[in-house]
Length: 366
Image 1 (tube, rainbow, N blue to C red):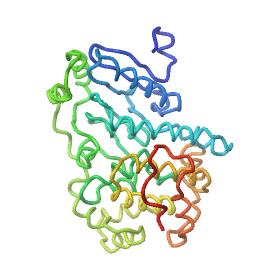
Image 2 (cartoon, one colour; image 1 turned 45 degrees about the vertical axis):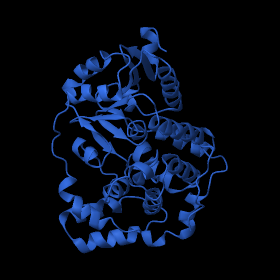
Image 3 (cartoon, helix red, strand yellow; image 1 turned 135 degrees about the vertical axis):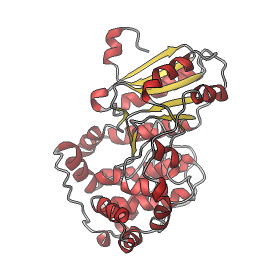
Image 4 (tube, rainbow, N blue to C red; image 1 turned 180 degrees about the horizontal axis):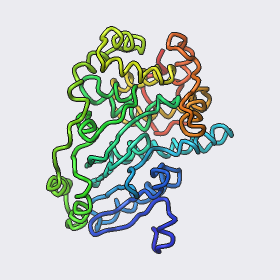
């Protein structure tokens, strides 16, 4: 653990004890706290340490700076590693996804403040927490279909636990969610205004070391407020109707037939996404809906990352979004009609080196 001001400044992850709290603070504010492999390993080590420490009642995860908790994995590093044929991207995903599952079954209260931008890998270290706090600055998103990837970190699990199609909408469009929207979709629990966060941290740190999860909930409830209205609730019935299909072509056809301003906007959004990514994402979501364990969804997604590293769209998407920033990726195939079963099937080959001891039960989907 950091012990001096010098190494605290340089460390990508700040780990410390604050009263009854074991604190994990992501410390790459200039990079929106994007996760590196070392940060994933730091979090794992901290969770191990705090789990065995009787003086720690709960873990609190926050991001340094005021722009966001975490903008996701370090996608530029994955891009560079994939281009070079390095094992580092696969190692990152392996350890990140294993961490996601660990958080989901962590025995102590895991409190996360989802303030500011929370995307991709930042969602993965948040959504499985026992106490998920959002603020008026929260901008929650899974924007992967826009970079030739698919919503991962178990998105095929947490975007399919809801009744209706809100999760399908979130995964396909990548549209950002406000605090109210994230709560509506079941991806966050409590709204706290950002100016009250220091008081909340102090209250949690002051809890007795043997405090229960219920005691943590009660402490947080004392700071809870009603979030500003979101945009999804008024459109929930329309989303459930328009996204209820098992093919992207049918969803697009329904949006075109609807003709409302809302549907027109979504058509415009989807038209910018990788056709292959949209197709793979919907398949993952539909399989996830029938899957009984988070680990099995993570296993399937991990296997699919091998195809990502071989794909055309991932490198074109990251180039357009992160490197050249021209926002003009050239997708291949360029049209939904040209996406083949072979293209999609490449993403559903079981991994030769699975994440978990028990492999998923069903085979590769046809």
